[in-house]
Length: 234
Length: 253
Image (cartoon, rainbow over all chains, first blue to last red; front, side):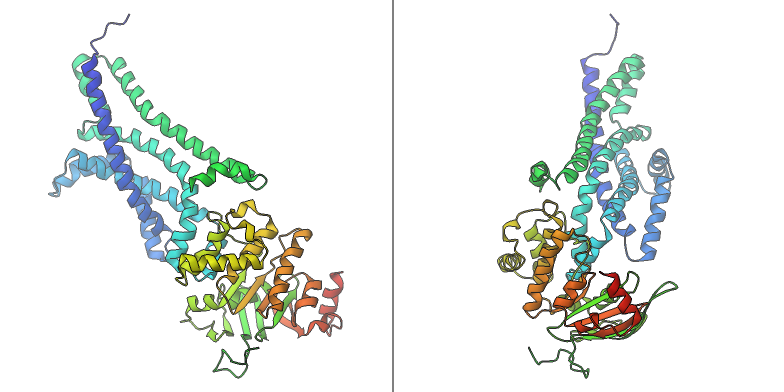
């Protein structure tokens, strides 16, 4: 049997780190989600300037590593006289990161709603906002849900980068423990298991949503009963 | 028929009037001087080959396409004016498309009540009463709680007609509404349109159903190469004046 100094206190410390990982994920998802919503709307805006400007934003963010964005926020901003905590720097960086990726996922979902749907709504005298919020977005949300949940897995995993700015989340907690007991294999195995325990349910959920989308909408045309799960959703 | 003219500035009492309408898509000249009028309560059928510009002409009436030059007046609205009140136009004009375009995330009733509630600000109860009324008109009272994908194509198209009727438009436009349907489903949709015609609704329809056009239309507009090639009562189908219409009618058999 393997001799190890890893004990319950260490595990407790890791779980505490995992809690901060969840907090950071939540901040990233909520902050990033709000920003992504604006990005998605701006990307389908009738104004060319707005579309180009947000397109540039998306390209810029997607073209730079999250690690560098974190460095910029944590080490760069203080040189400009803006003091940020590790949590704020990590949360803001993740928000920026999520806004670009989730924004593009949602833009694609909005654009996947067939053009004639806009037209039909327009011909029924609905205003632009009504067309968007009552006709197009409800359909886009359905399309976007599986990839959005899938992307949440990416967010959770990417919070580990916050360890480089000294934020003690799950990965950083592991480093701290390892620095004292020098058992990287055990420590990082436990960490991997905890990340897995958080991400796996999200993956399964995403896949279920994906299946449900592919399944009933085809079958429902012929048999109304197979449509039940979709109906109960609304 | 109501003698009141909705177009006080014009000389004619037409509900829909197109005059010398030109429209190009890039270098393709789709409409080259189209003109016709539709009087109140009249049913006009626009016929012609694919690419003759008939659907484009119809879409211009509801300003889904902007015209390059010419004049379109619909229920007193100058459709070609840059400052047109689009909402006011759409409140007066209903349109039904070939592909139904029902909203898949809403029930049949919600599909119908959405516009009366959102665009006209009717109460839930008022909109619901209208929905049940128009659903009865198209014979689908029992489908109010269904979702569009649970209905057949013919039923969906009847719902689309009901959805337009719920806005109580002054003119109804139909853009090849039976083209996507099986022959057996076509009949049920045409019957609904026939009922509307009998009820005095002003209608303009682009159609391939020649027998139907002959039976229901008061005016036939035959379009060819972006122009109104021949225009008149249904009798022009029996006695075409131009070789093109003669050929077109013959090819339908």
